Image (cartoon, rainbow, N blue to C red):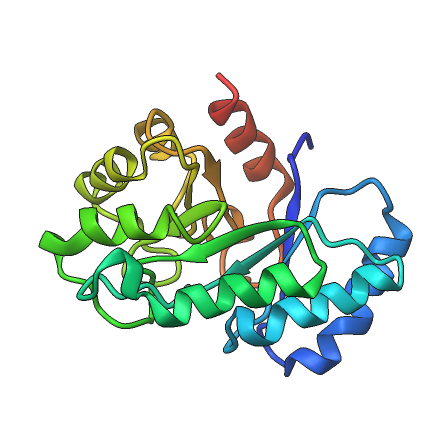
Length: 207
């Protein structure tokens, strides 16, 4: 339906069981833009896995972490965890795009007044700053997205919750990447996407 790429997520099982599925999808669809989200772990663990997959010829284009370990209470040069994760990425041999969750759903709460600083710091530690509403399927306030857009400057910004056919055009001027599932799922079905809804959303975004 014209989707630019997909992310695979291990919602119901631990990440070691996820790896064979990633390999299978890549083998079946060698040209597909493919990202992954390992739930419950950070880049400390994920990047070496991705490096190992790459060494075996299984290339993953992007990794999305729900928590990029940005701490807006510390100076930009004191981001110890974020810096360690970036070093692990560099040493892993994997060179895909890093989507890092910042002021992200179900993680440590970031106060509204700290959004700008959090986004600004994040821009130095990842390829795509990634934020969300307060929960899966819930859109963020437009004011949050505007703050992130300004603070990220030239770093791309992804929105990872709450996008629907009704609100996508509202965010489109501020967001580079939409990561959508719930907003286009079959009603009452968490796992399957409604084809018509996906096609309509893509048409709205591409206007």
